[in-house]
Length: 377
Image 1 (cartoon, rainbow, N blue to C red):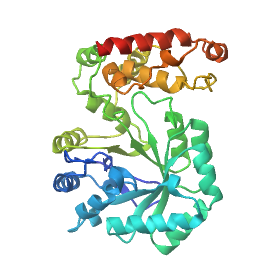
Image 2 (cartoon, rainbow, N blue to C red):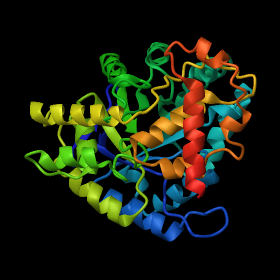
Image 3 (cartoon, rainbow, N blue to C red):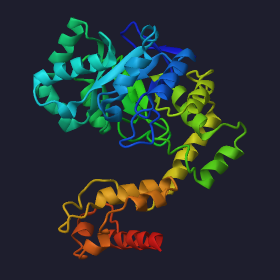
Image 4 (cartoon, rainbow, N blue to C red):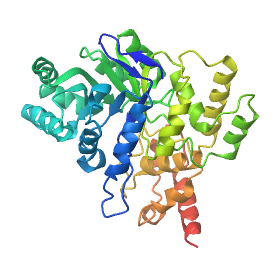
């Protein structure tokens, strides 16, 4: 498997990374990790050429780090680049940062982490921890040898991403990217900017949490089936990413040994710059076809908020559009509120008068609730 270098470091990592957020679980209360299966899977991935392992403080209710630590015994720690993350939402004072890191090192049973990331950075959360001394903490931990290189994982928009990139000499930026997110969150343009700044990029959610391979709409399958080269939706999604030389590692949250084996095969010949123009056009059409399935088109600007009846219009519409895109409306309605929005809406119209997209919000609330009631019949 191809290794790619993190700029400004002595680390080269496999283009496929082992994400440890979706390890196999037991069918018991609170769904504990199936440790025996998880350890076998992690080691199988490493034996197959994976050299990058990613975990975090909160994954699997705090148990992911423990299981990863067990999997990396017997010489496996020396074979990998190990990454974990500082849970920013638990930081209230400077002392919390080192206390949490020490707890993580103990869970993992290691003396140091190769990369330590500020976890799930957003604008407000980032400003808070910077004020509390995040940069000084990272510098001190590097000096103490508890971490080798600093980084951050990100969930916000491109403008915030660039601001964070420019704020500190990071060595890694972990972002959500896939066929559908070229213009969302950090954006592909933001990834290109990170490369120019000498920062290695790691990808999370390459399959949109599995949505790009599960319940794939018929019109998407038709596009794939009619193309001259036959590949699975998963391989197309990974290919879209490993084609880009700005990207060092692509994380996959593998839950079964079959997924490990399939992904190792997909990444056997992964190289940057392999996509032909026709392939790029295909994946552009895939994205546009998915986007055409969006029914409402709410941008989440929240100008309609607050609703006098406390209806969370953007959240409902966003979930509905996502479910429509991925042919998953049954699951959307299975999670729909106990008291449907139409039962609370008094049709005052304040939301529609504020909506810059001129969405007929009241009509869509009625449509969603009507479809919801149909699922109960």
